[in-house]
Image 1 (spheres, helix red, strand yellow):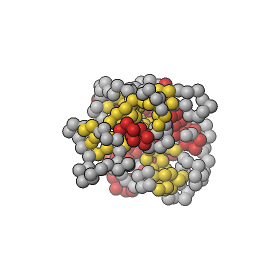
Image 2 (cartoon, rainbow, N blue to C red):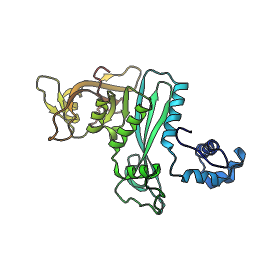
Image 3 (cartoon, rainbow, N blue to C red):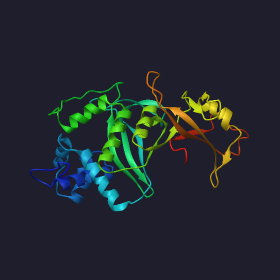
Image 4 (tube, rainbow, N blue to C red):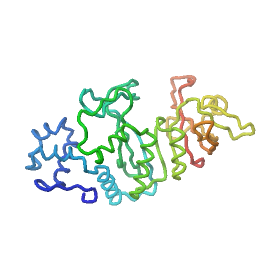
Length: 310
């Protein structure tokens, strides 16, 4: 904790207060006040004001403490050789009119926009476990609720993180989180993500970091270049029609069928940028539904790997 600058001048040791805050989260109490009434005295004589005081401090580097803790846990419990960075986001619905950090977000689980806080999380997946490494609050520009009170020190760690939440894009946040993990000597060979994070900018960044991307792709207008004599450009739907349909292969022991092809993808984000073609493997997958005589045009999913030998 000293490396993350966690300290207190008096009262309960800072390690005890952090431990109590962790218990509050693990016990899923609605608030510190409720945790204090129902559980706090079972673990410590510390008063709830100590918990509020620590949470309200702007100088504590919680991110550094998180990374150091994750690194220690990984080194003590996991020696897996296959490791992957995993990124995902989640939306916590909140409606408090005076609560800062709230904005409008599209909740893809419910298929609609909600008011709340969106958290972008980076974790490390191994053959044994999943360890959260880093997180960022993302504040959209739609219906964002302003701070009700200015930070005591605009140069503090908390103030800087809040400005990042307002100004940075999700790809920028992902770039920085992975760089921080690498600087902390937490390395991986792969990058895993859902289609929401399968943009060309993210794939290009992972390629520059020598990470193999394995992501789900949207069936959008992204065009791929075939590796045959025609070198034709085709969308995922067009590739399905001409190279996949009617050629499904069973996956042994699984209720799925698949078909993979190798194509090229241009990672240049606009026509003004120089071409940046890379070879990728596209894996088309569909579930086996014996009740349906014929698969529909939407009954398949698309995955991409930047390692064509997988």
